[in-house]
Image (cartoon, rainbow, N blue to C red; front, side, top):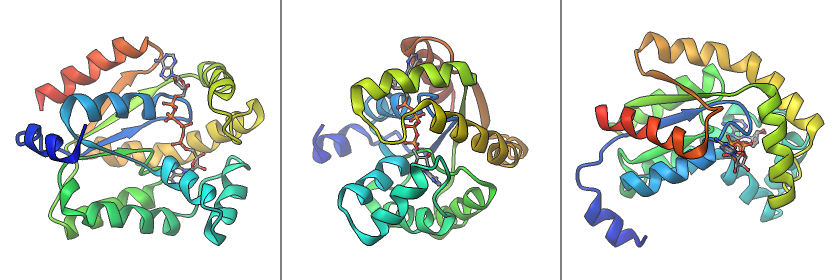
Length: 202
Ligand code: B4P
């Protein structure tokens, strides 16, 4: 959809959404659906980081080794990347944060940045999936997308890291009553419907 058409259609859809979950939970898949249906803009930190790698910048090669080890890129690097997006008036109150925040520090940084640009988070959607589902999906995606971090070994490592870093983030959002937990094991369309129900109730 063109930027112009998007602007025209989106007069009433003012909301910032965080989509949260382990690797392969379907954050990217669901963000694309929400983006299209509600005329919002997907901000995927994973995609931004992979773009840096593709550009073969100095930063890109540093990021590449971190991602391929199944680790998280530093909060500082990711924070810098997202501020540019939040500061852009086109996206004001229309952002789907896909894969950000992933740590408590990132959650606090996001709140500070949104406050700076007079915005807030309206809802946090958490997709819950088991490690066995994650492994299955990531191995299937490997055949389609050929991502360098899509292997069983790296998926397990990423899932373990998620288990460690996600708990404080989830309790942070639970305390502010923003958290909605969704069963991410269902079909893509079942999850689409559940998300639509939540968004439309806001
Ligand atoms: P991401 O790019 O965010 O991770 P992802 O594996 O793509 O997860 P996603 O949940 O989006 O999966 P998808 O929809 O594709 O991160 C990659 C790396 O970047 C991280 O490991 C980290 O190193 C770095 N990074 C990113 N953000 C960071 C941050 N904030 N801080 C630090 N580091 C950061 O779904 C997976 C597959 O399942 C797809 O093939 C899809 O078709 C399929 N699928 C989805 N939903 C399904 C369903 N309901 N049923 C069946 N299949 C489904």
